[in-house]
Image (cartoon, rainbow, N blue to C red):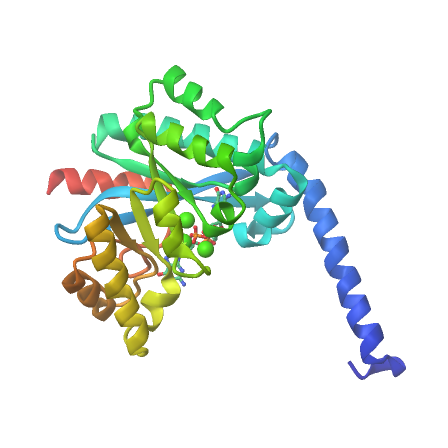
Length: 280
Ligand code: C2E
Ligand code: CA
Ligand code: CA
Ligand code: CA
């Protein structure tokens, strides 16, 4: 910035101030967003690579802000987590997903599994506790084997005994656990020893560079081989090209997700995909 004799220092403090104000405004708006019904869910299909069929999808939250338009989760989830609002927001997502599971299973695919992203703070909270979700499953007659909880390493990094116990309880109730963004942290592999895991989701950064960086391809393959031996199924994230798809398929990867198949779509559009699949 050249204007008006401003130096870099002023420039940075000014932009930092703006960022802080922006966060504060978003936080205020976030408080009302749940009550005002400003959130909605998009589903990104997860493809069974061998058959090409869609029997799974990941729920991704969207915020339709009345003035700012569509806001992506990367721009508000951290604010929701810091403020504690994440619990209310996650509960909202969870209930929507339960409704959708019941409706979609009944009408289109009785093996359908929907996965949702969960936040670390939710597992640490005791009142309200994330274990209330098991009651919701019962009360809404939602089959527990239709639900997958995605967890990230940052959750497991600080996990104490109570968190581990909660994960085991979910699993005991029939809910599946997926390790999200696998390979991006420092100790992904050690978590496989400690935590119950049904799925590994290979982070899209590996898939992305697989065709250029031979090490990333080797790592992908090693993850898939290791997972197989452990009885864990693998989902490759961020598949964007046919080349990536073929490599992963040849490596024996079970599931794929990414723009090559479909971007995240509104529920109605996801429903259409499932319907078309019924007719084939
Ligand atoms: P994630 O869990 O790793 O979700 C995958 C993200 O990658 C999504 O971004 C998805 O749209 C994007 N993606 C999928 N396929 C491709 C591809 O082929 N190429 C590229 N470049 N991107 C692809 P999205 O929807 O913006 O979500 C960002 C993150 O926000 C998620 O990352 C997740 O950590 C978080 N998030 C989303 N929904 C929720 C939620 O309901 N609760 C919580 N706690 N976090 C959420
Ligand atoms: Ca995820
Ligand atoms: Ca991910
Ligand atoms: Ca991510």
